[in-house]
Image (cartoon, rainbow, N blue to C red; front, side):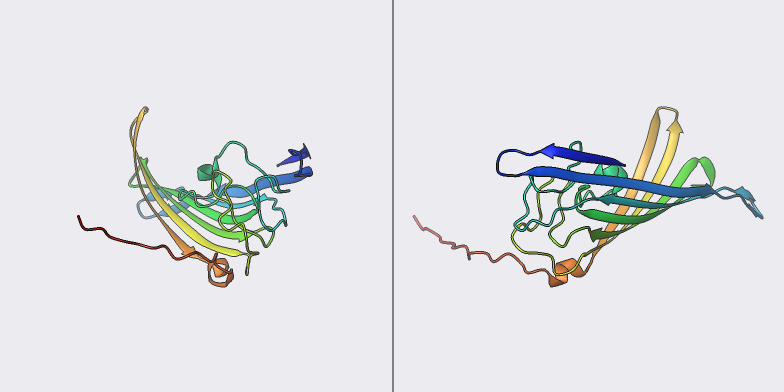
Length: 186
């Protein structure tokens, strides 16, 4: 975990924010007809505080991860940065066929900390003008196959899918000015 505090740029006030990550895991030992199977299971919780400012801005009272490592904590799709976010996730890691081939299944369920907006990995707000209609952002599943060729070379094959949550169905969309198109003949 960690905290951030101090004074922001003029006009943005004081900054008080934090984050926390915790996990519980265990390597299982299961006897099968083919021998001993040793999968590992993990339960993780990752929280990064959010601010309640609308419109949202980089200088609000939300946690700012400074160095983006969302890929390591919040799924391989890099949809959300560690700001204004709850991430409840589960990992299942198992060897397949041999110790050189491992399968990783990683499930995430994302929620907003404050009913404002999610942020991208580079801390840009997705919707900085309207408050959130719902805090549930959605669910992500990651599947990764890691094949070790030798101590210095691996092959990674992966697939990820995101299922959007109620936030995307209930939050007022930004109103856009229609664009005009024209064509010229010469």
